[in-house]
Image 1 (cartoon, rainbow, N blue to C red):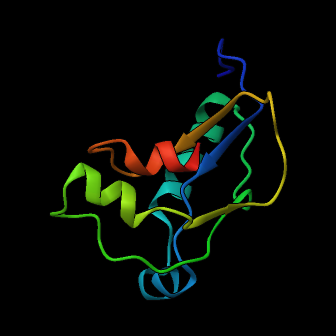
Image 2 (cartoon, rainbow, N blue to C red):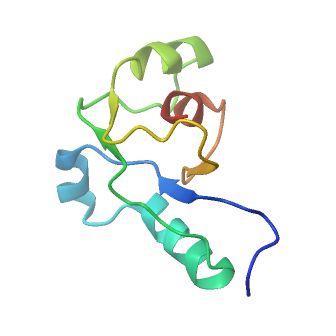
Length: 101
């Protein structure tokens, strides 16, 4: 099914390499792949890199979440003006999605 929403890319929130090795999958990537399958939205799984391992966001305040994620993600390409949908597995305060955006 094609979507009526015009997106350039759908981007999953990356995990730090150590966390990915522990978990063996990125749940945000699984969600993004399903969006691609159902809606035909283009996926770019390597646009962002989480280059700093952080403490869990669970149980910390919104302000602490923002500080925890400061300078954690690195973008690989300049996509100024592109319509990009960042996807995270769970949204509580929106801190991760704001930082990725």
